[in-house]
Amino acid sequence: MSHQDELPVNRAILAVRDLEKSFDGVCALHGVSLELRAGEVHAIVGENGAGKSTLTKIITGAIQADAGSIEVRGHSIERNDPNVSRALGIAAIYQQPALFPHLTVAENIALPMEMGSSRQTVNWKSRNRRATSLVESFGATIDPRRLAGTLSMADQQIVEIAKAVGADAKILLMDEPTAVLTEREVERVFALIRRLKADGTGILYISHRLEEILAIADRITVLRDGHRVACRNAAEVGRSELIEMMVGRSIASVYPKRPVPIGNVALEVRGLSNEREGLRDISFAVRAGEIFGLTGMVGAGRTTLARTLFGLAPAPSDVFLAGRPHRIHSPADAMRFGIGYVPEDRRRNGVILEMEVAGNISLANLKSVSRRGLVSARSERELAVRYVERLRIKTPSIATAAGKLSGGNQQKVALARWLATRPRVLILDEPTQGVDVGSKAEIHELIVDLAERGMAILLISSELPEILGMCDRIGVFNAGRLAGILASSEATQPRIMSLALGHG
Ligand SMILES: Nc1ncnc2c1ncn2[C@@H]1O[C@H](COP(=O)(O)OP(=O)(O)OP(=O)(O)O)[C@@H](O)[C@H]1O
Ligand SMILES: [Mg+2]
Image (tube, rainbow, N blue to C red):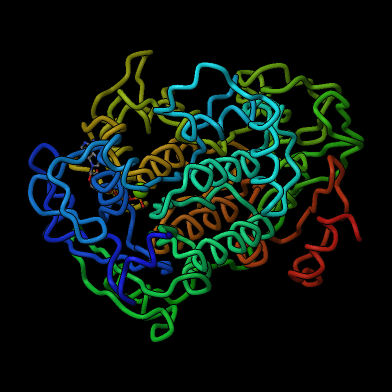
């Protein structure tokens, strides 16, 4: 008998009431209540730092609420912890897949299935078969014997979901599960979510992509500064109303691209190939003031190209900066030649969690905040304050350790560091991933400002509206090649998609 059969229609399978949570005296949740029904996708939206992740962590038992209650299928949980919540059929999926990289796909999926079982021997065949059928059932072909660490982010995320489904989770908490996926991959995840819904699974869904929310959610709860400001049927709210509830103001345009003077070629790549890294014959040039978009499927070569240009992957040939050939062997080379890079996986590569916000922001700018080799605390502070305000970074102070900020605010700290360096060529890999709508508009505005000052910008993004709204020209990757370069006037979503899929 499924859990749903035990429940009258519309009865909540999960209910939290009056949750309170503070960190070091700073209130993260203030009297938040929410109900999740069987077969429902219930979205939680709000700005960076609104309390969304804190809410999910309390439900999984990763952290304890200061006050309030949690009920699962009508039974109140006395003391929650990760084992209790797992036993009650609660599973969580986060933005960054958390698989064991040195275990195979099958082993990762089987882990929670076998937890608590006393069997000593493992039936590899049936384990592989089960993992394969789970993964295949939502349209992915992932070899169950592959090591999880060798999969793309998207495939890892799919394995994460298979793991939860395999462990019979009836309450799924998804905290920005699609942040690292492209739109096509998101469709696959959505197809799976619809199937899970039909089976009576309840899904709490957190995302900053409002199109996704409006497409998949049945109900939407809006959090602002730790308060629940609304809970509405998704069919009854529009995009702009949703934004206004989230940020408390309306936002005119998320893509403030304006024409700026285009200068000389700042960066040129001629026939760059790197068989081992899967890059083939890449040629393009970016001019000062130009925003050049790079898009395509995750894993098609966009990030590898960025890493190569920044000296993080072996450079097989010269690149041309302001017309002069240079071989880039290391990030130090790249920075010396005037290239800056904001990596995609900023939580792992971008922020030093123990270091305070101010130190993180000035890290790549030591020259500009030092006098005679000494870091001036005052300049460091000024720089940090400026960017905390500009990017609306929500932090108790600039002396707070970056690890204490919400995910999106950590992203903004890493971004601030590089935006403040003023390189000649700036590579931005998914700069608005995980960032709320309000800050997104702010970041777009900043990017246009930088272009206006003559910076050449390489903007890598999976979000086609962002690519279409921000770029002068767009390079589309397919399987390690540039399948085409489109001027913004000729670029459309379908054209980009067909190039990305190799139909161009
Ligand atoms: N471990 C912690 N120590 C101190 N403060 C914390 C901690 N975890 C969260 N906070 C604070 O609680 C508030 C809510 O954070 P939370 O991570 O829930 O936000 P969020 O809505 O998930 O934001 P985002 O969209 O950026 O992921 C933030 O102000 C954050 O700085
Ligand atoms: Mg969060």
